Figure 1 (spheres, one colour):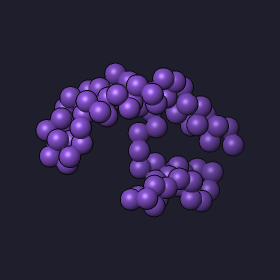
Figure 2 (spheres, one colour; figure 1 turned 45 degrees about the horizontal axis):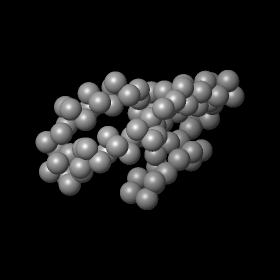
Figure 3 (cartoon, helix red, strand yellow; figure 1 turned 135 degrees about the vertical axis):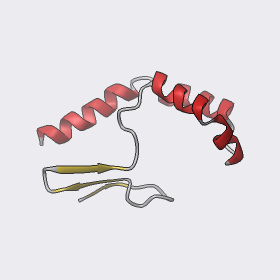
Figure 4 (cartoon, helix red, strand yellow; figure 1 turned 90 degrees about the vertical axis):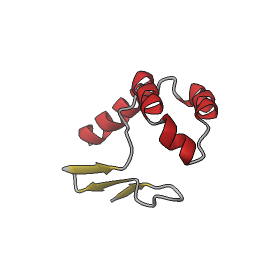
Length: 80
């Protein structure tokens, strides 16, 4: 079952029956972990044209509660 997509990645998440869940993103991400990723990949992000400062600013809007939402999504799938 197809569960999620983006414009550039049409198969972001899928389930195969009730026993397998495939995710092409980190649903478990927490703010501290994301900051470590940004620091570790600053050069690669810059080469790709990603403005890390602008990304951090945007993340301030979206990060509050993100770990709780990810945990709730996994729990809901497991409960189903």
